Amino acid sequence: MKIRSLISVLGFIYALTACEGSTQKDTDYRIYHARIIEAEELISQENYQAALTQYEDLFADYDFIFLRDYKIAAQISFLIGDKEKGLLYLKKAIANGWEWTEFKEHKFLNQHLLAADWKSIEDQYEDLRSQFLNRIDVSLRARVQAMFEKDQELAYEAYIIEDEQEQEKFIAENFPRHSEVQLAKLLEILETKGYPGEYLIGNDFWVSTILSHHNSQGLEYVKTDSLFDFIKPKLKQYLKLGYISPYEMALPEDWKGTILSEGEDSPYGYLVPPKRSNISRINKARNAIGLGSVELRNKLIAIEAKTGISLYLPDWVEGKIEIKGN
Image (cartoon, rainbow, N blue to C red):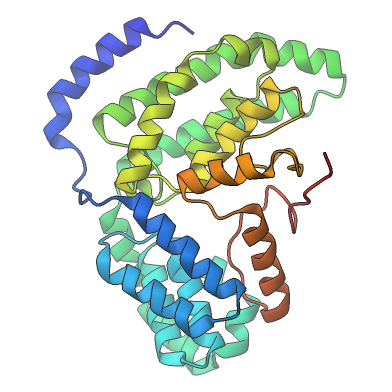
């Protein structure tokens, strides 16, 4: 898609609204994610007390904490027998968006919480949930959710077409225009509000999914697309500011790399298994956006199996990421 007209219009909008953006403190979240990797290294070594200390030091230094990190800190606390801290970080996670239906069935938590604990959490839940809803931009959340649902509807229409050629024809005829309209809306949000992820709207996958769909339309489209390349520097900017997580950065780019390489390679090693010949490059790319190495992920998967905790690693790959031969 040609983006010159979009740039001029959005540049004008940005000039009008630059002072109206979010109040996220100007702290470098690339350092935040590097410190999370250090904590995960400690977890992989089963040094849970040191890992918890690392998380707590991080929590003291940043105003906004990603939900995943409170979830992990809560579980580590329970794992080492510190129930008081476990409950503290569980409640902080709820105040940061963890929903009752998600954590009530959490097997590990149920092993460490008594009926009285659950009653206490239930009694406080609405107040904690209101803290989350008061922090995020509820109106923007509804807007982005509507975009996501529209995206899913079209994706489902394509999915149920059984004939491969008919499916490809449907995608070619319907997805480009739809996706370009979606990204035009996203660009306006990026310029006026920021990246609509966990910090702004309390959701870390709607926009990442929309971008991934855009980057998975097929080789001919992705080769000539310029919209994602225009958006990418803005994603990097908002990674630094704490609006977007490394995982949200990785998936759309992995899709683009997979399509452009015709299934031979992916930048972060999720959609196409890494090889010994490119694992160093992949790990370097992962580190640059705040993701741990493939090897670290695999160690963490083993820790999950051993302890029963969930480290909330992306489930785009089930289990360990296999490193294949050359």
